[in-house]
Amino acid sequence: MRRSRGFWSDVKKYRTLLLMLVPGVLFFLLFAYIPMGGIVLAFKQFNYSGGIFGSPWNGFDNFRFFFNSGDAWRVTRNTALYNIAFIVVNNGLQIFAAILLFEVAGKWFRKITQTVMFLPYFISWVVVGAIAYNLFNYDVGTINMLLHKIGMDSIDIYNTAAYWPVILVLVSAWKALGYGTIMYLAAITSIDTEMYEAAEIDGANIFQRIRKITIPNLMPTVIILILLAIGNIFRGDFGMFYNMVGNNGLLFSSTDVIDTFVFRLLITSNEIGMSAAAGFYQSVLGFATIMLANYAVRKYDKDHALF
Image 1: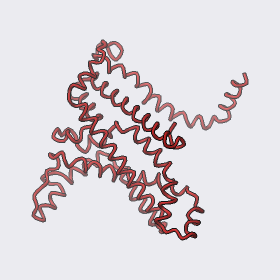
Image 2: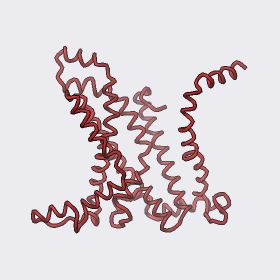
Image 3: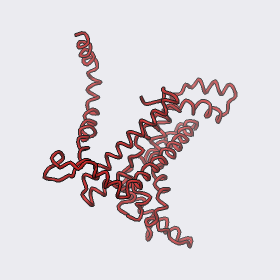
Image 4: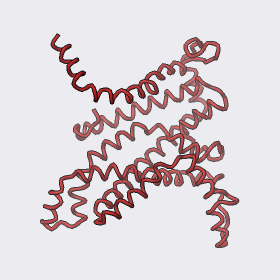
């Protein structure tokens, strides 16, 4: 009875905070947990008359067909390599920009720079894809028009897969720079200023203060953000890849990720069971990756682990 009374008294005491929590709980319940029931489609031969639960079981046939198709390794490799590049490049640039802004003396310059850097984050991937098309188009693209002006040949970017890993990594870094920089800048500004003052009195220059104070104190934030990013290492940014590349089959060898593969499979061949199998395979890989990464961090320093 005491426990029950204590629980309801806590609910009454924190009712405002709990009410504020309700929208977030409902969001994840409706869009993350309830749809998990659709996992059964990965093990069924779906037909519309039977529906999700009435369709006949086919065991692991969907997975077998997915792996035998020859696309599983390609899309898995592309997804993992792109996300590793995004984690390394994006976080590196964001940390560098955050430290640079923190050390800049001009208050107004810092605010204006933050605003300008943050603007690309709000631009839709549809708009970014349109900008890229106007830049890279073979006939009327800005880059090829400039090359013509200086007497050089046009570059057929949309028919050459080798260019796209670099393009996609750079575009991702440009779009995410402002958002990540603000998070790292917030972490830096929370560092005790007395540490910097003491280091300055001891004669430490700016680079020594960054190396001995800023970076060590920033590491817990860096580790947490990288761990969260690693959890999505097998989950490609569908909006970016689809709007930048579309259904251009000439670029699939270097740009096709699990998310675009599943979407294209569902739209073009209506293979719902195989699409569900690929999605389930992606989720298992993501879960295993975050567990392994968290285990590695716990072995190094358990205070920095997620759990």
